[in-house]
Length: 206
Image 1: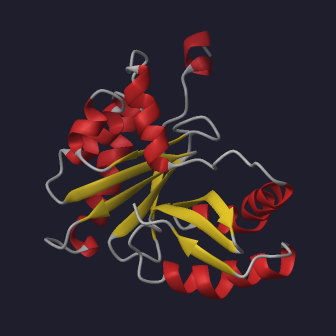
Image 2: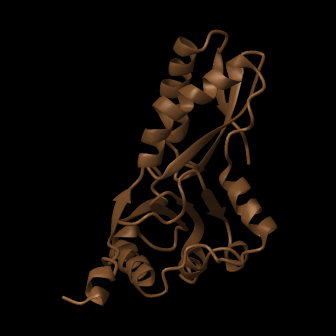
C-alpha cells in the first residue's frame, strides 16, 4: 500500500437534520468546518463573498436567506418559495460535494474586519463584568448551549440588569416560533433556579 493511499483524507459526509425552526435546516459534516469557538453568520451573499466560499456557494441557491456556520455544522435558512421536502436532499449533496471538491470554508486571506463582522453577527458572549454575569455565562455554556447547538442554533449572553438577562439567539433559533417558548419556559426557569436575582430572560432584537 502506498504512502499516498494512507495519507489521503477520508471523504467528507454530510447529513441533514430538521430544527425547531421550520425555515431552517442543519447540515452536519463529518469534519470540523471552523475551529471550536468560532461562529460565522451571513445574512446575504455579499457578506459571504470575501470570507467564506462555502457560505457563498450556498447563497448561489435562490431560496437561501441565511447561513450560520459553527463547529461541524452549517445551518441554512430558506424563504417561503419552496418546501424543504423538495430541496433537502439536493442541498445536502450540494454541500457534501463542495466539501469534497473545493473544501474551503474560510478564505485564508479573508479581510480581518469582514471576518470579525461575520463572527460578531453570530455573536459571542459579552465579556462578564460581575460575578452574576460569570455565573449566567457558565449556566448557558453548561446547560443550554449543547441543546441549542444540537438544533443548529446559538445563544449568547449580552447583559444582566435589574434582574433581566438579555441574550441573543442566532442560527436556527433566530426567528424560530418555538424559541420564545423555550426561552421563557425552559431557560428562564433554569436561570431563576441557578442564579440569585434573575427574574426574567429576554432575547435582544437584532
